Image 1: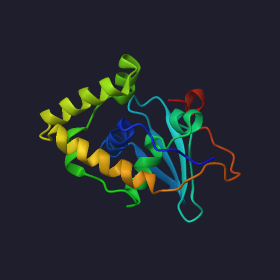
Image 2: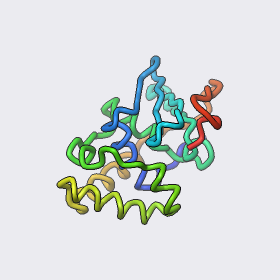
Image 3: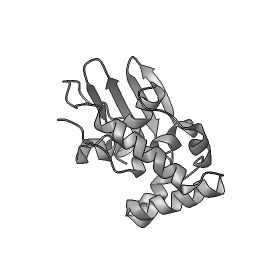
Image 4: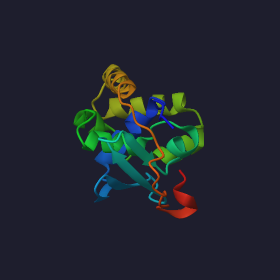
Length: 160
């Protein structure tokens, strides 16, 4: 299955996962990403040569888009640019808590942009970065289903 582009907020969640040190490489192309609440762990596999990516997060598993764990790995691998200024302004955001509380990415995006502003990054800078990443993601062709059994990395099957 070809992975679709994610909701825009997932770009910022990916930055948050990196700046908060929640990503660990555990093998060739294999990573574990810990959720912002620390409760869940997502198994991520990225093989750019074969055009394969998979993750146990809900966005990838159930909705068919590149979830933030995959985007984080693409940033760490240098496939997508990492913006440390914006990332540092997002340090410590409790993404899971915000997503559960508001249940609408548009609302969470506004809250996050306000947090970034307090961290010295203007909303237009955030918007420009997100748009750039979204355009780059359109050009990245990744599919799931390379025949590997998904390893469940955490409680509740790694669900977010």
